[in-house]
Structure formats: C-alpha cells, structure tokens
Length: 169
Image (cartoon, rainbow, N blue to C red; front, side, top):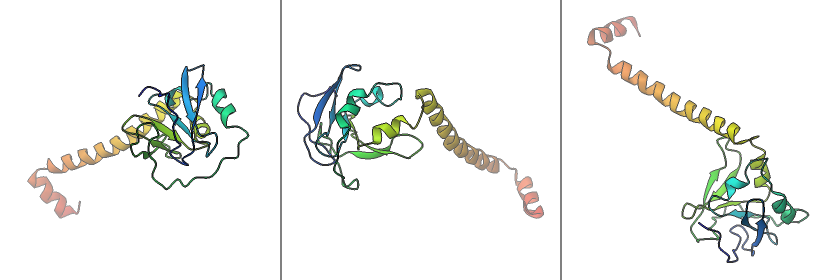
C-alpha cells in the first residue's frame, strides 16, 4: 500500500501520528510523537529500516527526549491505514519481540523501543536469513525423520514384525 498523505491515529494509544520524512529512503514514516512513541510502517517500508546499517537518524530524532505514555499491549489494535484488525507476530524466529501486523494492507506497527531492539537482533540480513534457514531445517528435519520412521515401520515384512515381537523390539 502506498503511503497515504492522511493523518493517521496511533493504534496503541489513539493519538494523532506525525509523518516524518526520511530522505535516505524517500518515505514518510508515521510516528506517535505526542502519545506512546509507536511507529507505523506502510507495506514494505519496514524492510528499509530493520538492519543496523540502515539510517534511522530522522526517526531517532523524532522520538528522543520524549516521555511517552505506557500502553496496554494486550488490547486489540486496528490498522491506522485501513482499519483492519492487526495480528501480533514475532519479528524473527528468535521469538523475542512481537510486532503488530496488518494482513489486509501489509502495514506494521512497532511499540516504542521495538525498532532498536529488532535492529539489534541480527548484524545483517544474511545472519537473519541463516537463522531462519536453521529454524526451518530443524522444524522440517524433525518432521521428516518422524515421517521416514513411520514409513520404515510400514515396510517391515510380517516375518520381521513377528521376529521383532519375539525378541522385544
């Protein structure tokens, strides 16, 4: 979804969000500067800011030295761009940081401090990708082992099955 020029309301605290233009990436990011300090990224914007080498000086400047109000993270949140209910998902396979995602328009909302925490999870995208591959391999690998074991059990001949029963296998 393309960045709208309309003013958005924060999905966490309801305050009006401020559009901060980030010249390095050429996008507007919506930041709750007068409420909770949350950040809303339109579809595909988040990937421009999630690694340590990507410049977030404009975002930091917008949120530094502010005393943000706390929010109840257990309450449902609705996308400020399209109004759909947002889903909570982990930012990575490490399952340490939860972000709010909109499945309708692809937007992401991060509570105050989560962008920095996400950027510190991995040094770069290659490290993140390797971690995902390890996770997938472990999950699928275990599943394949169980499947292979079950298949091997089905292929045992009746004579072998009888022998296994007699010897206690």
